Each structure stands twice: as C-alpha cells, then as structure tokens.
Image (tube, rainbow, N blue to C red):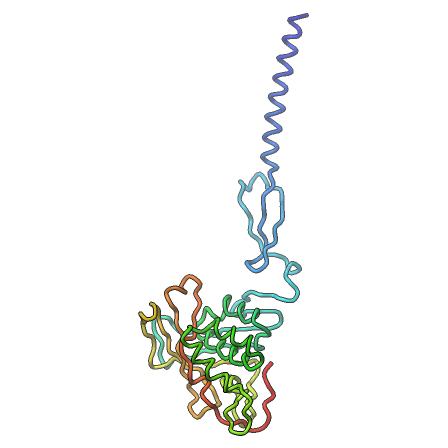
Length: 285
C-alpha cells in the first residue's frame, strides 16, 4: 500500500509538471499586442491577439476613414494640406542653397484661416516649413488682423521675428484705422498681394487664392546677428502697386532647424500704401 502511494504521487507530480509547462507556453502565445492605427493626427489604439508568426512585432496601419474627426481633417494629401473644408497647397519652392530671379512658384489656398487655431496648425504642420508658404501666411496674417486685431496680432507674432513684429504692427495699426478721406486706411491691402486683385476690379482676387512668388537677385545671405541663420530674399507678385515685385526676407535660424519652421524677417513692401481702390471691396473668404 505504501509503495502504491509513492507511485501515485510520482505520477501526479509528472502530470502537474507537463500541465503547468503547457499552460505557461499557451499564455505566452496568447499575449495581446498593442496595435497603433492611424496617422500622426489621429492615433487609435486597439488590442489584438498576436499570431505565432508575429514574433512580438507591432503593426502600423492606416486608420479607417470613419475614425477621422468630422470637423477637422488635418493632414497632407500629396501637396495639399486640408483643414476641415479649407485647402492649402504649395506648388514648388525655392532651393535653400541658391535663389535666382528665374525661380517662380506659388501657394494656393481656398480660404483665409478662420481663427488662430487653424492658422497656427497650418503654419506649424505645413506652410511654415516652406519659404514661399511662410510668405503666403504673412498675407493671411495681415488679413486676419483686419478682421480681428487681437487674433491678427497673435498670428503676426507667431510667424515673424521679434524685430519685424514691431515694424509690422506700427504700420498696420494705422493701415487698418478709421481714416476714410485720405486713402491711408486700406482695409484691402492684404488682398492686393493676391493674384488677380487690382484696383480696377476692386481687389477681387482670382479663386482659388494664389500667392505668386519669384526669387530676388539678392539671393541668400548668412547671418550671425542676432543669431546664426540664413536669410532668403524673394518677391511676392502683387497687383496693387506700380512695382509688382514686393520683396521680403524669410529666415531660418539654426535654433529652428529642429522644427523646420521659417519666419518672416522683413516685409515693408507688403504694407506700403497701395493704389486707391476703385469701387467697393467685397472682402475675402
């Protein structure tokens, strides 16, 4: 009887070892893996059982269309950046090592940004990463200042170097003032920088709105003050002046290389008094 008990105990121990080992192995194979789905603007997290062939590798897939936010669809589709039903597109850009007068490109957009949130997102995620895109956003910021001075000032401060902010604000405060008789107040001055807008059509731009750009003979310049960076000289072609080439300076400081964002460094010809309007200005979308 005692000998039987020893054999029985040994058999039970062996059975337990096999069972426990099998359970542990099954537990490892059933470990759930975290799956990242979606793009950088819309990350969805889901759990899914890993197959035996996955070897623990995470899978990155595109989120289904239904997971996108209905009011804001921020992201790049080729060259087009979409924010809600607003679109922005860069068509070519300047070379960062050399700019010449034979360089032509443009930026098109369906609307002026609706608010600061949209303006900031478009700047940081798309247009601000292009030399010509930054120039186009200066035009947008000027128009937004005409609509709401507080919002417009925030936009101007976001994309301009500190020194240029003072210059821009000092003039625009008067340019968007209440003068009506002497022509100094020109609510439409930003529109005068958009393609197709001239005084004889009351500064009504062609749609979609287009900022046409050309390289300046000044090319590029390395700067050391107030800090290291590169200045890119370019023109925006505006129909509101006898001289259509409106020069500006776009800068990339070494401090901004991590984000890839350019800033407006100087643009007095953007807000120099343009030709007096003929007719009634209808505004911009």
